Image (cartoon, helix red, strand yellow):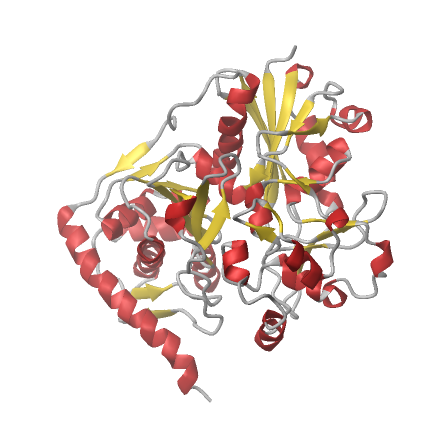
Length: 483
């Protein structure tokens, strides 16, 4: 019997394979990039077949493959993957970020839904909900004969599980993001399926994250160099996996993710969450009595990438300039470069630098961007009613000590930054599966750095935050005054 657990994390930009031993230590990992096709009509797609190609490439780099005793998965949610009768994708994977439906089209589709849609699903209708894509399948998969579609999947990891086991499954968290799942009954909502024109037989089976989706098929085992027949556990969508990885899976806990985009999330008892809320409410992947409250915002690290492009300076150099500036003055930044999703839904709002001075250089602009990201996190925490202490921050954008400092000051709370924050989804899946596999539980985040706020700077940050909120309100009104 092997003694290693293999976790596959199918993200939006890369697939990561992480190997854990029975003590919960990550002993090896490998990553393969994923390619996204983005077009001017708002379409955002990936070739679902590349997820399997990337899986093969990443796993082939790992040692100890003969010692793997089980697999678990995490992956992006709110996708739409149409399958043939043979279980193969019959078109591109439509990603959660696809925005080809215009606001008037969304409004028209909303009118076809039951009036109690929010109570059924636990969420207000979001343009990203796959139910809308199903209702307009001709728009998203043009020319595809409907009689060739045997089923649908909604998570990137679910498409990989299909290749691993031949079964179509989904976890409760990913199911919640579809707009077809009844959060009270924990099952597909028949009325919503009917509106979407989908039959129950076309939907994946809902299984808890720690449930076994099936044994590893012989063909998949041979392609990956893994033992045949080992259990493949369902795992969970990335939002749930990261929540568990950040140890925010117990009530009254919270964390923030800072990547290209960002989110804040925490766990509540489902009765206390009282959905639908302005924020997302997702079913817990394992514990049916709990819910994950999550508020995704559209621009985090992407703002630094943008600043890097317009200044022709690498992000690392911008951060060096910002650090060298010390506590020098900097403008106020609104991080709404792509509109906003949370804590308010506004596709028209745009970002700004306020209080620009001729003496402001790249360092001052970088400090403003870092502060704006921190203020966005505070705004989302307050809107969602999530606790701020202690706040764990994960993701590639959270690795900067200066970003950590701005967060601590904006929140006036200690900030905890784990060393391996980019592996939080994989760690979350390990924590879900460890009890089932007899592996040792991981009790705390290893190698974390705690950053305490400076009281004087936190007081200044609080005043600036209120200016940020007022400026955000003005920015939302501005498009209405423009021709």
